[in-house]
Every structure is written in structure tokens, then in C-alpha cells.
Image 1 (spheres, rainbow, N blue to C red):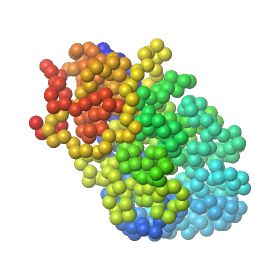
Image 2 (cartoon, rainbow, N blue to C red; image 1 turned 90 degrees about the horizontal axis):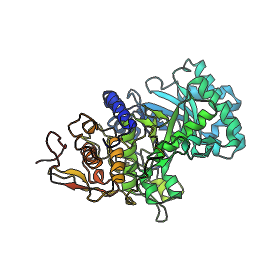
Image 3 (cartoon, one colour; image 1 turned 90 degrees about the vertical axis):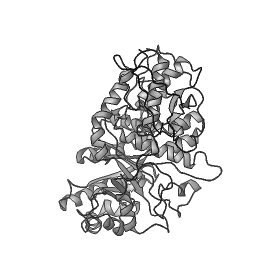
Image 4 (cartoon, rainbow, N blue to C red; image 1 turned 135 degrees about the vertical axis):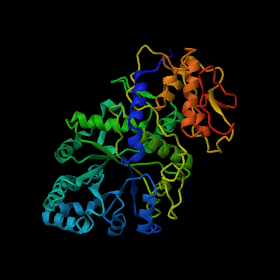
Length: 486
């Protein structure tokens, strides 16, 4: 039989076991609600919008009482924030911390489901040594104020970090924190560990692509077919940068002895437009990144170092913030517009019949690469995703293009089956096992991924090695699924 790595079967079993749970609850999907804007809809309208989506958590950068109140009795989890400017007072005066809790939490909880208080935002990479030193005492005083209000076990306290806290992130297994920050981070992590609060991080593959704007890097960032990158220490192949960045943080935490501290992705996103000199912003790329990320989370596959669960992830952002300074992209991350319509559809609406992006992501489960295995030579991927076009009305099948090498077919086979689709028909005893060739198995798997991922043209791309056909490739008892009308 053509090689189907053990991880493929493992991915599918995990997806199957969690299918019912995921369909009912997607508490791992959150969104950021920034307010540096003068055109935002009323809080009540925003609350209604969120209730109409599969988003179950929202992060506020401050503690806007109108927004917190609007979210009352919605069941939506709320992160609120204490501003950087409040840190000195929170650190030096326990009574100020009590007052902050009395003003921003007590009047709203539990009707408004406040789940976490962030003290500051990316303070550890602010280069403000005074503020950095005061962060831990501030966090501790907020926690003590919650304890006195009998809310210590109900609302967590933490702070948000940028990826710059890492000195090294490649390969992921060698992730380590910056030596200059280790002592301060150790105190914060000890607090996280003792209270069960998460370590919050802001990974942005978008910014990584900006510093390495090659087509293969773009596909790696957007969860699209790519040759992958192998961790030289673990021999694990990563097929997307999000997993690699999160696992680098996991490795850094483990190296410091904090294996039990959970990670939360407090921000990640991709802008849909930018200035002419910016690399990467576009509707297509934003839709691909956010849509495929959501599919990745919904699969419950996890990352190679944290398999079988989805990291809580807050998308950036709900709306554009038109008053933000800086490059044009800074004002162009909104998934929704102020009139409550979608900037682009990534399947968040509860009324959506089917998300327009794939429902399952690239293989994040550990996929050891044998040193003896031949390295596939993939066809150069296109620099941007295929532009959206109408789905075919007639029955169509996704098949490999003529003349592909066995190595490329194997790459496509591993990629397709790694998405969590049911590849059992091409395993021994399956209806499509014979003929036992990589070409036959790849054809079946590629078509199944296309049919289950939404039947959009970009679902049958495979780095330009596949094409749509109106000829049914089914044979004997081997049935190739098809959509559309016949």
C-alpha cells in the first residue's frame, strides 16, 4: 500500500471522536474587540452579531461598561483589560486594585461572563523597565482583590505577550525566551502555574511573511499545500506557521519547567488591505488565513506538541479600527464591517450552510520524517490563493494532473489524508485499496478533500497539481464522492 503514516490515522480518529462535541461547542474560538475607532456600531448591536456567530469569547482591551453590560446573559465569555497606565497604581496600592475590581467586575458579574482580566498588553517587550518590574505585583494585587471578593476561583488574571519574548522560535522544539526576560517571566509563570491562568501570546504569521515574502512562505502561513518545514531536532514536519509558532512557545515554557501552564492565543489575524508598499494584505489572503485557522481549530487535531485539543484562539479583529496610527494594514483587520456585514465570509455565522473555507486543516499532528525517505519536489505554489469563483453546478471530481511524480503524489496523499478525512477506503480491506498504487490512492484522497472542504476551486489546487474533471473516476465498488447535480 502507498505510505499512509500512522499520524494520518491518528488525526482521523481524533477528528471522529470529537465531531459531536465540536458541532455543539466551539469555545476555543474568540475574537478581539478594539475600540480605537469612531464608527463602531452600538454595543447592543455588536452583542447581537456575536450571538449570531460561533464565536463564544470576546477580548476587550479595556473594561468598557457599555460593552460588558451589552454582553450580559449572552453566555459569551469576556476578557477585560487593565490599561498599561494603571499598572503602577495596581502594583503599589492594593486598595486601588480593589477599587478597580469593584468598578469593572462586581457590577456586571455573573450576568456578564467575565472569565479573565488582562493586566497590560505586551508589557514585557515595551522596553519600559519600570513598568516591566511592576507587572507581577500588579497582577498579584488584582488576584488578591478577586480573592477578597470571592471571585478568585472564577475569574483568572494574566497578561498578554508578543512573540518578541522569544529569543528563538526556529525550530519549534528549540523555542526559548529571551535571556534578559527570563527572571521576570519566571515570576509571572509561577503565578500562572499557581492560579491556573494561561500564558497569553500574540502569534502573527502575517508579520513573519512580511520578512520572508516567498510564495512557499505564503502557503506555509495560510495553511495551504506546501512542502512543510522539518524540525531538525524532532524530525517533525510542520505544515503551517501557526502551529510552529505556538509550539515554539510550548517548548520555551517546557524548558523553564512550566509544562502545566496552558497557552492562549490572545491575538492572531491577517489584514485584508494595506498600503502599496506592504507585502501580504489582501482579501484572498485574509480569508485564507482566518478561514483555514478556524477549520484547523474545529478539527481538534491540535499542534504536534499539543495534539488532540485546540488552543483557545482570539481572532484579530471583529471590526476595523479607523483611528489607529501607522500603516494602512493596521486599520484593516476587521472581519466584520461597522454595518454588521462581513468583510469576507469564513463560516462564522451560525446560519451559514457551509463555510467557504475548508472545514479541516493541514496536518498538525506529529509527522516524523524518515531520514531515508525521498524528499518530494513539489510544484511551485502560486503566490496567492485562487480567487473565489462560483462552485460547479454539475457533478465534478478533483483529480491529479497528468505526469506527476510519485513523490508529488505521495505529498498530496499525505496532505489530503492529514486533513482528517476518512482515508479508510484506501487502506487494506477498503473498497478503494486496489489498485495498490500511490497514484490511485492520491486520486481518491484528493477528491475526498475537495468534496468535503466546500467544493471551491481553491480546494482542488494542491499547489497547481490537480484539476477538476466531469468524468466520474469511480470503479467497481470504489465510489468517488461528488457534489452538484448530475
